[in-house]
Length: 213
Length: 128
Image (cartoon, rainbow over all chains, first blue to last red; front, side):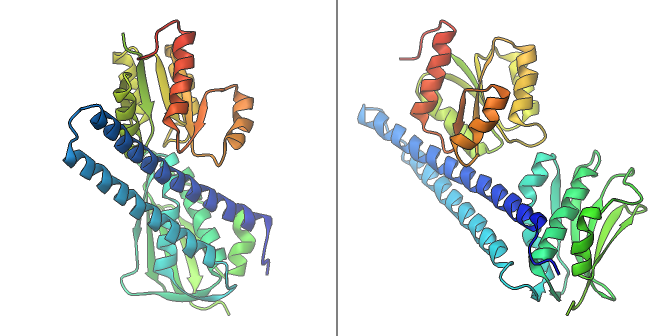
């Protein structure tokens, strides 16, 4: 198999760049909140009344942003470690949910929203986690580029006869019968996976085996 | 007469707090998180300056600037960017000819320096 490729590196770079923008925003908010506290302190030193409730709210806002930053970094850490092992058993709910979260900023650039429906029962498959993340990211990109006016995509994980499937529901009557997936062909082969389009729904379905080894 | 500034960034906590800090410093500031609302606000208020986030949902800051500049040629612009460094953004800004940009997190004194340059270029007085 291709253990590393230009596409893999580009995918890794795109995800890390997107995460870094999120972290920058968190830091920018904390920076402004801290600055506002300084402003209020300076005003108080000049004799203006200091609103203690206002100070408390700003401190709470800062704590919220620190929690947000922590969650972003935890996800970045999970994503980075997905490349540790070539093949391993993974929770498909967890892995797909992670990529859905990491794609949210990308989706917002399309003015679109992503929602995620995990499988009701825990669903594990033996697969190549990094490669699967790559394919899920590209599926989301394909869906976003074709999501029509509604701009809403639902990603659902389900058990299937072969193993598992990830469905991408797109509310667009003009969704094409087929999509060009040349850029994904070797990745799909390496995962023993298949990507199908069902125009009647419309949806894309990524079919995954229970075990690729 | 106060210098009128419109702040546009999809991060509500960022844009609202920055607006409050600029208001404290004597500027007349309004803010929004969407390009659609930015268009509405410029129709009803005569802004001197728009501070735009470069990366926003639906329409990027540069496209928003183009649209606003077409309708309001006198309006000036400053961009905020989450790019890694000013050098990264400079590569892009050199191509598009934008010189007023700041990398997040923003140092408010640097932002005010840029605003004051714009105020002076318009022949107005800076807030005391």
